[in-house]
Length: 112
Length: 124
Image (tube, rainbow over all chains, first blue to last red; front, side):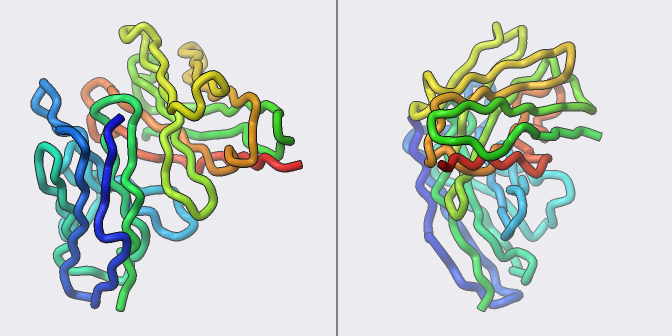
């Protein structure tokens, strides 16, 4: 199974400041078709997870452009250019290159 | 508009069974793979299993802890997927979501959790 490891476990950010979350996979998520199968979710309290980024760097529909995904192979990063109060929640990375699909343990973002 | 609506959750005793449903609309259901993901209260997301489309021979796969207890199936004529839960334990309590993958021409739908999930509570 592919192990997904996120860091940090939690971070506290001042509104307007940037934030960055790291996700590492135990093996490359690059498929033979050229796609990298890495997703980022944000789960706000009491809500279903919201898809932010798919295939490593493509923003989902309606996701603000302050969110960006980058990385390749086994190292990935979710960046928020300027954190807003509504960005509070738990962020998860997930690989869907192969079954079993596996998730990172989550990173909790709080506002200072 | 793409919709996925989960149903069938409820309260069940340990050792009991439950069958969840995922009703879909707005895309080519029969050509898509269906996955189930769950979340225990206060815990992270956990993949449960999936069933591929006819072109993928309806292949199923499960998380190790669920193999032999859970079964994913589908009825393409009803645009509905199912998750049969057997031999339930208290650790199976949580919210169960269905989502898509391998949707033809629509990679943006992959693992987009569109529904509110259905709540399974295993308790005596």
